[in-house]
Image (cartoon, rainbow, N blue to C red):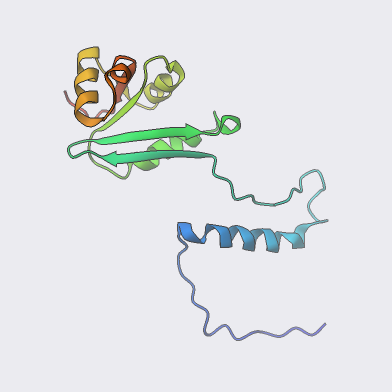
Length: 154
């Protein structure tokens, strides 16, 4: 086999963005084929690196505060630090106080946020904040809780 070096003078190296993810995973999985038969069969899987969304969490700017919105981690991926990592990422995006609304009966969610430095607010403060920063029904206000990070001063 004859080896040759291709002309790479026109190739641009640049940082990757989220839009590049499908291409990145395609490159990794294509290149990983070289390891098939080298990696023990019980450790090999295809695709070698799946493109998989396992959690999501949003942040909404509401003027003097930011709200964490719609925080979800795929059931089989829970308790692996994904939610905490998502939360820390969003916290790093704002210097404003952060408020989180969730269902009062979602005790696991409240425990998660408390474990990560948030505190549940009083019922009157919860109702006031839900009316001020969220657009939700009175029924949802009755059944919701609000937690705040250390930047929040009431």
